[in-house]
Length: 121
Image: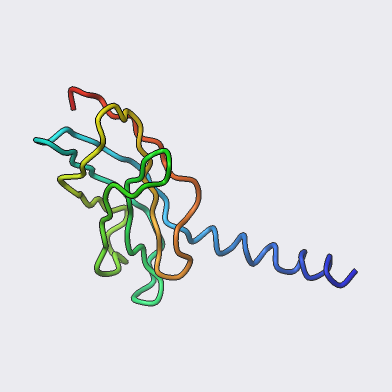
């Protein structure tokens, strides 16, 4: 019975933590030379150096990291914000990738956002 009670006490805490996870609002992918350029718009209630969106990555369907963009500082006064990453090499034949964001306090958040790649860019 104590285990069940502890679960119901911790459940709201876990929900609050997820509420502060970074959210991907938009992703633009454009063919650029041999690679791709990704522009990712993120919303996150950055509170300073202890809790801020600190990166995002592009992965394939198998979870292989194709590109990573580190975010070097909090964006408390710039929400949402967009940052780009160029020269992301996507293997031939891959037409869908996934973008996921992370924050300094909770790590990787939620489900990755699928992004369909158009061969024309």
